[in-house]
Image (cartoon, rainbow, N blue to C red):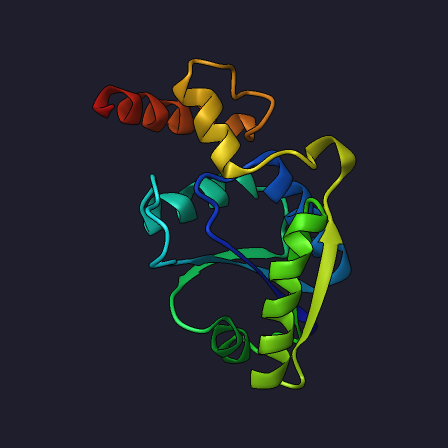
Length: 164
């Protein structure tokens, strides 16, 4: 069985994330969406909330599992017998950082491949940060997030906007 890891912070999940996950699920027997604890970021959603949102958003993609992790991505990948890490790229600006990480991961785990999937053109501009920014200013986030989690994400954005 060929397993891939699709890592990210997913704070919150977007339709761009789901695009990459769906496409990866067609290339591998199993895709583990790995929700990371990133100490450099201050997430709006807890790790458990992000996992729950992703579980709802990936219902119907039978070969996808959702899991949280902290630590080195290559260690998580090895623990799950993965042969590849799948990363989504929106623009050239993403590539430099992701390429650096891929080279580092290949030094730590020489047998681990990193695969880059370019996002579909309709999602190239989209990020979790944009979703939060649009929502904070009262804009419509419905084109940017999966319908099944829209209300939960909008509720959190409204909670955050009251704190400002």
